[in-house]
Image (cartoon, rainbow, N blue to C red):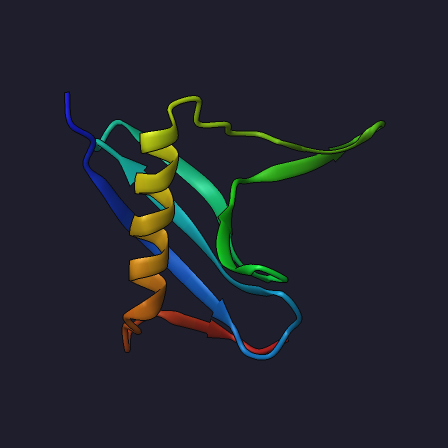
Length: 93
């Protein structure tokens, strides 16, 4: 089974720290993952999975086990981020 990944929503942030955007990812029209983040880190731009804060710190809510799937998700999100959509939301916080 090959995965079909599409971005459902992308909200970009103008000059608000390291987080550049938040998006929702549709996986095979069967699963919607909300809250992936595009982050500018010390080693470059990357995709961070949705996470929450617990009693012992932050932890991911979604963790791809397969490395190829993780890379496919990152590629899909970063490619969508690189191509601005004029109908997309732009938040300036």
